[in-house]
Structure formats: C-alpha cells, structure tokens
Length: 477
Ligand code: BG6
Image (cartoon, rainbow, N blue to C red):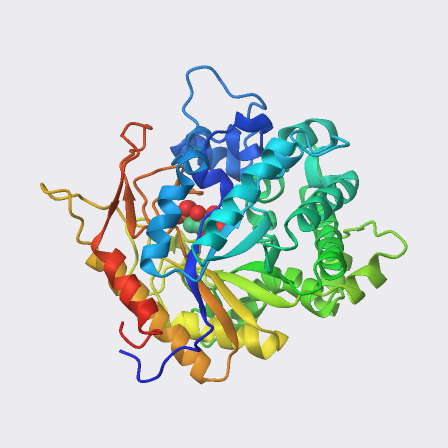
C-alpha cells in the first residue's frame, strides 16, 4: 500500500504501561498507586472526573490493575511473541511505586529494580530496544495522602530522586526515555494524570496549573539527569495529540480550535522550547492564576529541553462555538469532541481519522522541528473469538493500515519520525473504562471485564499482518 519503504532503522513496536499490564500490584514490595484505586465502568469514570476515591481499596470491589494481564509474571512469554512479530522496540513504563513504594524512602526497593533489570535484559536478548516512560498515571498513593500529590512542590524532588535512580541503574540498557505520559491529561483527568483530588472550595484551575508547573520542572530535571547520567540516550516528552478542527470556517470556530490546541501545546511548548509561551502567561493573567515558580526554574526549563516529541494519536478532535452543534458530542482519548460528520467512530465513540495522523504529525513537526515518535495509536474494539478460537480482527488491521500509511505520508512530507509503537500490542486493561473488552492487541488475552479467564495468550489475525508490515519495512500493508 505504500510505494516507499520506511527507514531501515525505524523503530517498529508496541506500547504498554505498567499499571495496565503488570498486575502483581503489591508483589515485590510495590506500593499502592492511584490507578490501584480505580474500579471499572461508571465508578471509574466518576473518579476520573472528580469524585473523591477511597484511598484504600474497598472490600468486594473489583480493581482491574491489581492483576491486569499478569505481565509481571508472564513477560517472557509475551516478549517471545513480540519478538516473533519482529518488534524492534517495546515501550513500557516503570511503576514509580515498585522502586519507591511510598515515593519517600531514602533507599530504593531492590526487588523492584531487579524486576526491570530482568525485563530489559529479556527484551535486549530478543533484539528489542526498551523505550521507557518514567510516569504513566501511577503516583504513589502515600504522596496523595501526605502532600496532595503534584499540587505540592515536594513531589519535584521526590520524582527527581526516582528518575536519577532508574537512569543510573539502567543507563547501559535503555536508550529511549520519556518523562510524563500524556502530560496534557492533567488538565482533563487530574486524578489519573497527576493524582489530584479536590475538596470543596479548592481553586481547581490554580491547583491544576501549579501541579502542571511542578511536573514541567520535574520533567526538565529528568531531562537534565538523563543527559548527565546517560549521554548516549535520548529523552522525550509525551503529548496526547490529535489536532482540533474548527467545525466551520467561522473565524470564531477557527480561533477556538487554535485555543484548544494550545491548551495541550502549552505543555510541549515549555518542554520543547524551554519557556512559558506568551499565550499561557496571558491565560494566567486573565484567570487570576498566580503560579509559584522558584528562582532557577526558568533557567532550568530553558536549559533542559527534550530531545524528541513523543505523542499518542487515536483521532482528531472537532470544536464549535455553536451551542446547537455542541449538543452532538462524542468521546475520545482524554477529552471529548464535537462529532465530526465526515468521520466514522469506534464502538466507544472514538473518531477514526487516518488523515488526522498526517495532519497532526506535520503540525508538530512545523511547530517544534524535533524528531517525533508515535508512541501510541490503535483501535479499541470488542473481539469475538470463533468456535476454533481464532479472531478475525479485520477492523483493527484496517484502522492500523490506514494510520501507518498516513504516518508514511508524513515521513514523505519531511517529518522525522523515529518509530511507531501501537498501543496495547497484547490486550491490556483499558485506561478510561477499566474494561478488558476494549482490546487493542495482536495477541488476545483470555480475561473478561469481571476479571474471569485463564489469561492464556493467543494470536489474532492481525498478528501475522503486523509481522509482515515490519519485515517489509512498511511497504506491505
Ligand atoms: C492513552 C493512554 O490515553 O490511551 C493509555 O496513554 C490508554 O494508557 C490509551 O490505555 C487508550 O485508552 P483506553 O481508554 O482505550 O485504554
């Protein structure tokens, strides 16, 4: 389907996160994290939207992260399957609470460190480059209880200690690092993105942007540490991307689209260009937000910008200033969107827009002029195993094919893309709903929404398809 090959050193692979795959939530000395407090379905969504969760797991409640797909114990089997597909890399995250169970210990938890040593060794043995995210939604719960999580400056230093510890430990094994997963998530799902819980009377906007500043400073400190400790490695940021389209050519819609994009670009502007953009300063003024910054923060941000821009792309977004149009919303990754009449949706209401991948990649390239890395993309769908156990996930192949082709076009447009790690190459727990039924994988995992099933792995039709994509350098889609 493409008439050109992707670069020979292109990093084809997949991406998972500790909290959605590992399970073993208290094994090996791991501490409790915010994701371990998220049940499934409506309760989960309510907490993510602001309901105050119980900070200890409730008796009788089902928490999908507690066992997830048991990657903690089965990673060797899973990596063998990734290797069979020809993966060049696997994006994983380190669970902060495996290394520092409360976030505050003076010495790291050796058992946690050893787990990731073994995991990275297994990947490397199989010719798979680890791509490692430092924080993927899993703030230690102790830090939420004691400091209110990222609203408190204290987390900056604690995160720096954690980042330095893992960079030092894995400097000879990991060449690709990422700081905060979907850092812009913080503004929309503050509990998931930053462990923020609000009480009545809180100035929510003030707290969110103060927490954002803390994460941005922590991110710059991690970049600094990476460049000092592992000079041959590169470290990037990570944006939940997907450009906003104005619903009409009414300049009001167009302006609103620009503003919506800037809500997210704000983070990457700081991480990539090293300073708060003018529009953000104005936003703070207009909304009477007084963000505390310490002496030296500005310099730190300026001198420690990221090496590449990692981003997730599931769909584009659409926005309108017309209240009538706004009645027709649809869901999507991180935040909702006005339904786009030109585009189809998944069963979960996520818009499908392959050309949007090309548009988004080009816009990020034009804005930052740094290498990009597509670190998430995929189609969450319900799979129905046939009587013989086979799964003909043509719909997934169709989605991925069209997005990979669009990414290839972006490369032809001159965009430098380091690699592509599709989301959930093996079925894992859904972040937004906690379901297992919302599957992204080439590898099926026998487990349902209630946590029942053998956890047995099997190949879907897309398994061989992706294998061919990789072996043909993307020429055979
Ligand atoms: C991104 C996250 O928001 O989208 C992942 O980084 C998440 O953690 C992915 O799983 C897909 O979302 P969902 O809700 O379908 O799992």
